[in-house]
Image (cartoon, rainbow, N blue to C red):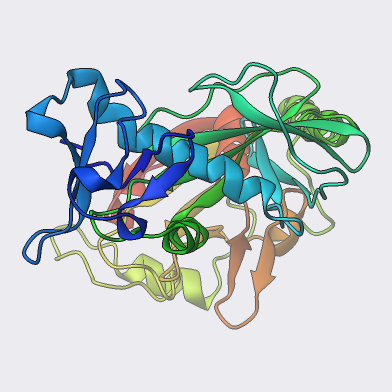
Length: 353
């Protein structure tokens, strides 16, 4: 059961458990049902108010939350230099090639004093004000674990002061109650209107990125495999020394090696993906130890180092492989042009392909 840390005196003023005499001499009444309260100020239990002769009603259990809400309003109105949190909203858009995101942020300032709402309700705004840019501001008070104040897409910003109920004895005086709110409450934006068009502009930029990705995919579907100067189809030239070393491993029945000279820094226990394109060239993709993807041409024809440059793949001179920045784009591109695709842990299975 919630315990009352304050009551109302005969004039309707809020009185705290540490400011009144003990027992019925406190002269306070329950702010919900109006029954007389007893100030419990014993040495063993935390100080609190209780109804005389145990007259608590179910609705009186919400009395502490109502009192804290009332204090929270006074706390906010007393903050002449109230610092508002930065508003942040992350927008996201996804294409087949990438996940795009952009964060819209604002640092609004209060340019008017907070005034009581005309008809405050428990789950709605209790205060009104104005932000810079003449944006109307509504302020709600949420007593955890109440559900968040309802957001709105109106022209007004919605800010909530999220509070928690104090433990019995934490707020014996008004000063302690205000200090408790200052230490434990948090201001949270529930809604901010797009008055200056920042969100709309960000959404348009993200949509442009998605459209650009779709155009790239469409262009790659139509484009033939680039044929840099010196490129020769598979079988047109003898394999180099690295490819010869790989071929020496392809004897049937031998155990699968832990590593391959032509696939340096391969991440252990990861598979190879083989693509034989319809117009001849072949590619093998594998995962590097840092989690990125590498591509190698098993035939090592002249010009293979630049054949995937239009997809961002660049030669790593130290490893002798192409580093792939966007594995999804590369796999989509290769998959659309491949006549054969195989996956396996032993590249010797690709010999006949």
